Amino acid sequence: MIATHPAFASNTSGGGLPSDEWFTRIRASVTGPFAFTVAIVGIVGAGAGLILGGDMNGFLRMLIFIALVLSFLVAAQNSLTAITGQGAEITAFSHDLSNLLQARLA
Image 1: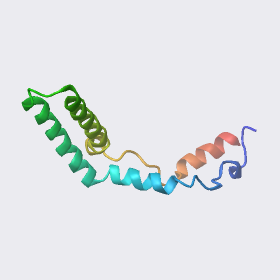
Image 2 (image 1 turned 180 degrees about the vertical axis):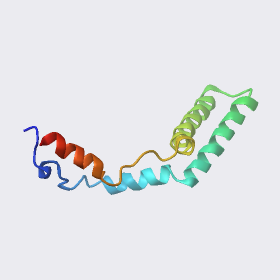
Image 3 (image 1 turned 60 degrees about the vertical axis):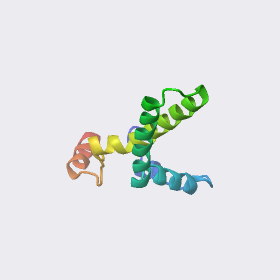
């Protein structure tokens, strides 16, 4: 079982949940450029409301904090992508790695 056949690790595409497409669309809309712009405006607006709104009741202050946290959550993914880049992606199996694995198994 150390050297199994590659078919055991193949992708079977057994389908997904009925809501997968819906969640994918929501994720795309939350991480898009429009959502990032709205998040930045929300951060600035909530910050200004907290700084300039000296005589605010507790409920309004709580709503502003909720808007601020949600804006940070939406902006976090886009900000990290802008700072660190897209990340590594392996597009093809390396020929040298394939030779190394065959030499180890032989």
